[in-house]
Image (tube, rainbow, N blue to C red; front, side, top):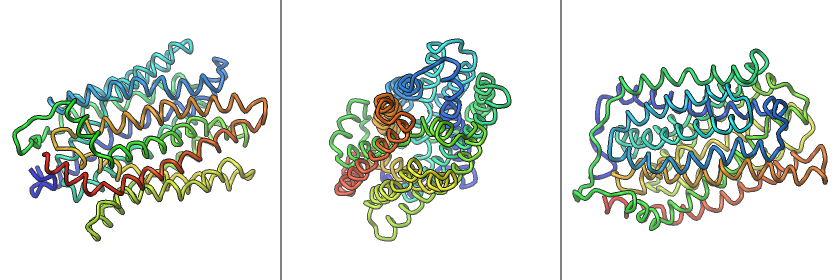
Length: 426
């Protein structure tokens, strides 16, 4: 069966509704994940935590379980009902987010975040797979970019709610409030989203997780794209974990001020997210060349670097915020193109697993190592740079975007051949 799918299931109105519901799921996913960042200053003060402990809480503790649980859940989604797995996952991570507010010690909070990670592991892979069955390849980059808008929008809501909620109610109640909307979205997925007929391999052969891993290993474009996304995620999560702490300490901002600024900046990131998928689709169709799905995000991570350095090195708070806004646009471009290619580089029967494999590499390196490395570098820099330790640690982390850009370029060199190979094996 050709991946382009000449006939899309269901009417456009319903397809768009399903995309909207899945988007809402990603919004609460990003909300529940990002709200921790803005609450870290208050948590650090209450539990007297080091920067390394903050990095552990926001990084590897979450990422390890998110990534390792994602693959078996995605494999199950490729064989069973994706909507029920997604609905249950949303409900579980929402409840665990609320439990974070009940933690009375650092280990308890760490355990609750691990629970959130396990739930969120079942979010994106079945969503990507559903979108890929609802939308043909020529529309998929845009559809997945719209879905990926959940990250900046959810982050915006999480940062605003976290910043102001911390001042209004304290960080504990804020966590509880943040967990409630997901339960409503879980019900919408369960009772309004239809499971489309799954695209079957034309050969009649059913792929298993091990064969999917072998297929991915033969796709240089997939491997380079995964590493590119991982290096960019290392910057995204490593710096993002400490941006609020940096602004509170260095620019004497309150958490409410940080939350308001970052909520506005997240809207700029939303434009970048949509623009990345839309531009990749348009250029790819105009020139009949899928390399643009790699070249567009590759260029964006490099173009955003000077503005990110401005964020940490300039003394004027207003200019710093302009830097954060412009960097947010470029930093968000990679979502749609990367997600679309993860689906195009494997046979249709392994789409959820392919999304999970991309997220596994991205999460373990980006979310898992990024905040921890940033925290450890900061602790090492404290005796040397004292009050500026966090500033120069974040500058160091930002430079990993150069590495990301190199891998996107390397992925572009074989992506067309790898897509043809995936279609031939479908």
